[in-house]
Image 1 (cartoon, helix red, strand yellow):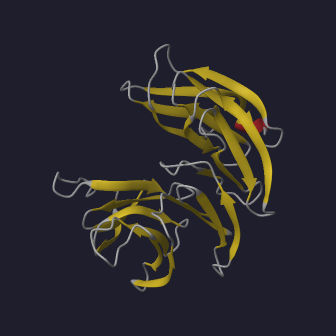
Image 2 (cartoon, one colour):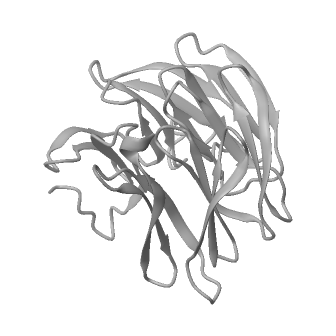
Length: 264
């Protein structure tokens, strides 16, 4: 696989597309798209450093944000890039640095430190602006499915509360008090039914039902505090859904949810 990166050309960001069929990395030189199954390089563009690269399913559309090392690649500018033509389709400029970007077939989400913007992905008309608590890490989660299309954002700076927002109907769906400590990680299941959270304490991972805003599962990662780097749902055919957590302890934890996929 050609995804290795030397110390002089480090990987600045990496993400899967919505159905995990491809993944994309941003480096000091540009960005690359790979096939997830084979690891084959599908596309490469050498035009400068990028800190955010998000792909819309297997389409030619990328949402990219520069690292600011060149004037044309400002961290305050979002570029919608067409890999088929190799050109920028549209650029959106903001007053502060862009911290996270999420896309699906209906919506484009742009997260800044104190505001989150919701756009129609086709027209790029701004649909709503959410004032948020200070969110310096750009923490968010976005459901790629259109049935139950939700955005999750931190709702408090002092405790682990989550704002769940319906981005299709444009209203707050619920607020979940998940942890006593501020949030460190959030993720939706692929069907949008569940939301998993971890706090800065890093000892407990909780899973809530999105529709009812009720706690469904609670998993203990460990006894001692640890920084949770990521949470990820991965459905296993013939087995219960699995939730995986990575942390600063150097371990990977996998937790199985109680209900099998074919029962849902």
